[in-house]
Length: 387
Image (cartoon, rainbow, N blue to C red; front, side):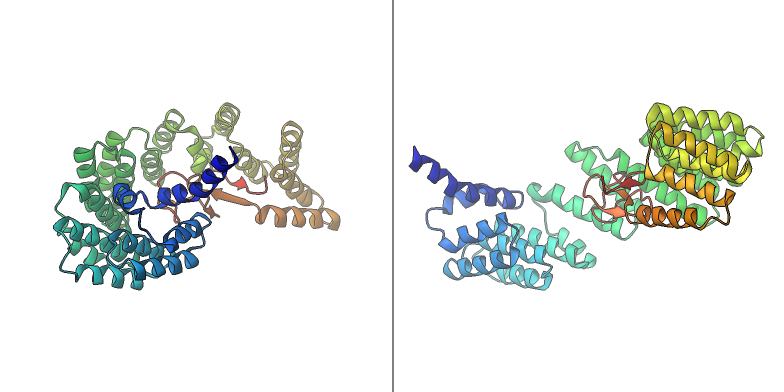
């Protein structure tokens, strides 16, 4: 029994290592070679398991010296080079493989796919697109289309991005409706800058046809009405957000309240905002209401509002609002000002918009995460990373 357990302890790192490379390399080829793989191969897998990629690279270099004909070992080493940011070494590695005359057509395509990944990572998009034309087998069509899509996004070629999304949807049954809606919104923003607002509206309406929960499209449509001082129309458009994704309402709550103020119906708006806060837990709406009361009704009413909120749901953000109002009511109280500054400093280092996909922290909201490029994964509300 003891021997059995020790055996499994030895083999577990091996299978973890295989999992790391399985997405890029045919596992059958790896298993077929395990009978004569050098010990440095298994050392490399162990280093990958513990994310020590420098030592993993050294181990696979040793393995390649022993088995220079192993295509799989070259691919693993290339992946590690990319992981380490040594793109030039990955490109050289794969170009040398292409110079080998004994490669089969299928192997040549596999190397070109790796090289395409190298060029994309390095930002050599022209070379990447040129190489994609040489990948003709069915095996690499989805891979090729996704890289071409990513290139289009990087270069902000939104029409091309939409085209590649539709090809992936048509050929592989993967939905890209959310992404296409954002590409249409990006096109709309370009048209707004060009003063072609009628075309912008068409793109936004198309975005809503493609993806009915596109709050971004409704936010921009409402802003266009707001700029034209069509406040009732802006309100009607923005109210749709509650039926789409209520938490996105915080992105336009201040302008929404301004629309009602222009119509002398601010009390109606405050009631609606309170409904959103209570029904959907959008706590940051309290900040919008507090700032409005502070500006329009004075610091005493704002202090009372903050004090009531602090009783209902104590938080450092509400405490900051309370001391902000108090400092205005007691202009000469240095203790209050000092406490307020301490609270602001504490909040300033802890509150971020967080990407729920990769954990990226940002001081402002992004529709696309700058780190992992995922759409609609960055939180709308500021979150306390200390919690």
